[in-house]
Image 1 (spheres, helix red, strand yellow):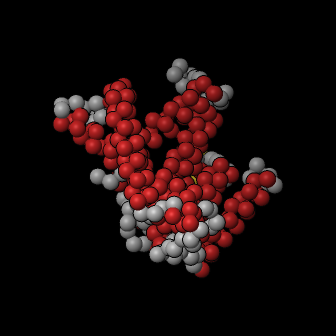
Image 2: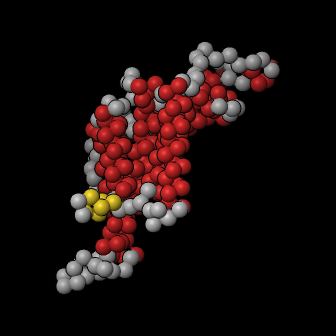
Image 3: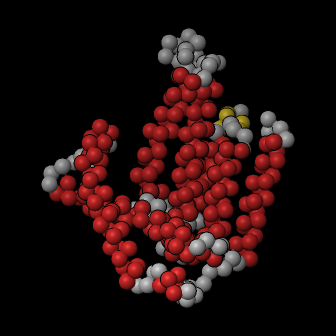
Length: 275
């Protein structure tokens, strides 16, 4: 089972885009989730704009990047209580009426505006998570670090970005190993959906997970130094890269399009066109 936020390795045009292009798209997408008006009236029914953006991103990952939702189903399941909790808090506690039904005791204090606002906030968070899923699924960590280095960052800083992107899936692999070890010993603390048992299981796995991550990071650091990671900086020799990465015309076109759409949305929002 592959981890969430790990590179998928498929060969699509989305995978072949420069990481800087995908990063620009991700940032513009996140800002648009907060800038675009919400809710939208579709056939007289108010629909949360971040919800539509969330569903659109899931479809892009599925049909363009060829990664089905089953690949990150656990991530989607974890989003449900987050969105539901935010919507519940805004519906019953944080916003005034008009309410759903004045005559029904349960719905008498349930705010319609609060429900819609809660959905907006919850699905903005969901849209952010899915947008980063798209970036991580289609971007190889080494290519990401190399693109940051070509953009002007020092090599060590760029490598830190790439290593951080690679290290999170390694933590997931470590967690799955601990979960399987507990399961082999007859413990199901990490296999159910009971939040109390999951919290207890996470507390048990925290120490071995941290020690395993520390041991793995020490081994990686030692391997890097044995391969001369700091040699160019210490000796003044120019670092040689065996792989080159460049922005292609498609990258420039998509980056420009994303910035133009974002700028237009901000101007319309500040001008009061969307209220």
